[in-house]
Amino acid sequence: MAALQLATAEVCDANPHLILSGELRALHPIFQIYGRRQVFSGPIVTLKVFEDNVLVREFLEEKGNGRVLVVDGGGSMRCAILGGNPVQQAQNNGWAGIVVNGCIRDVDEINGCDIGVRALASHPMKANKKGIGEKHAAINVAGTRICDGEWLYADTDGILVSRTELTV
Image (cartoon, rainbow, N blue to C red):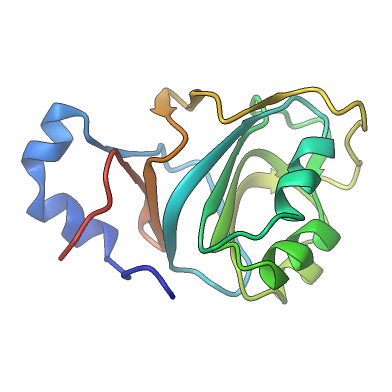
């Protein structure tokens, strides 16, 4: 079941009270758009790692059930923490999207996948494999606090995070 597709600009225009209260937040416009699905949404699963992709891969091997994995990679520009194989697996396992506060690689392969991917940039070097990180923790991406279980809405205008699922 695909989540309701909401235009982020319309959501912002219709919900100034949610923006004022902090229940609805827009991520800073720092993300590049990858993958074939430019519009995606779903409940958030959070992960905090730094230059290590073991836990990212583990999550994407699970059934996604329309969820969005939000990875706080600390904004590192020194290596990629997501590549083509895990993105292919995420697509096959039913994830709606992946947002990475860090870099990805295998861009051509990722752009061929029917999934939404956002990342700061691409980088050819691969990540470490130590398996260090925090699952389901509250994370902070470019000044925006994001919690496990909140909802993410992404389109070509940007990315919104909401405490609850939004309806039209």
